Image 1 (cartoon, protein in one colour):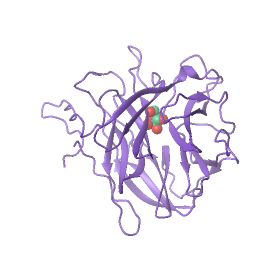
Image 2 (image 1 turned 30 degrees about the vertical axis):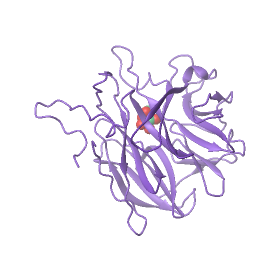
Image 3 (image 1 turned 180 degrees about the vertical axis):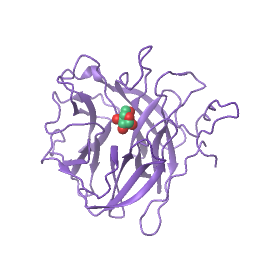
Image 4 (image 1 turned 120 degrees about the horizontal axis):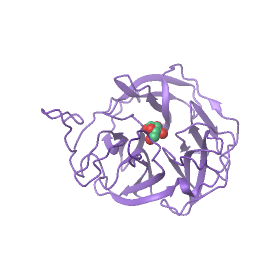
Length: 305
Ligand code: FUB
């Protein structure tokens, strides 16, 4: 398999292959994939890499959450933008934008957790509720008290208890209605202080996998630790994924029809269908995951096909 996005001999970037290879959709530019398996489909919530205004850089034009889904990991349906910062009246008016989403389903309802800046321009986490994976979503009317930072991730354990991971190493149980924290946030301490963002929780064979992205100047960027509870303690296990070219290794992991998949995003993506882009140009990719008998994760092989 080819490694991801090698430069062409003239120094330019190649166009990634159209689906069914990576990136998995080319109908929009999206990042920060948060994947779920519900009712025989994989649902992937992403942020949207809109171009920033002329002459500007950065992520301030990312103002919405987008949804794609598939029943076979090959044919993807683009459900479009399903939530937007404009739907959040308590967010600051100057520069309304929101970043990586995290979704959950509980008791037939869907919950979309989103990071946004409040009226004091501090990052906080909000939540919106809907009756379908695509909504329509209605936000709860306030930031979730006790939250701060970005990158919310919602995890529901086998016993039905729901947890919100967010910001720098924070986790807290969610209330039964999923709209509040049920306890003070707990600081995860797993003994490796290289955390940057994108905290994620997965469970396989009774093992809790806490993963995240490291600082961007390292060769590897996705790291993980293994533990026996959603709070840890976690034992640091090392790298899962190299830093994708032009992006961060913001990822999620799901089991679908007996195989585990690693969703992440590429940078420097230029679609043959448009989106030449001055901005972040990230797009969603997926790879198979492989585990060793002791449960450790083999490093992800990034592929174009
Ligand atoms: O997409 C905006 C930000 O970039 C996310 O919140 C981070 O995790 C990083 O992927």
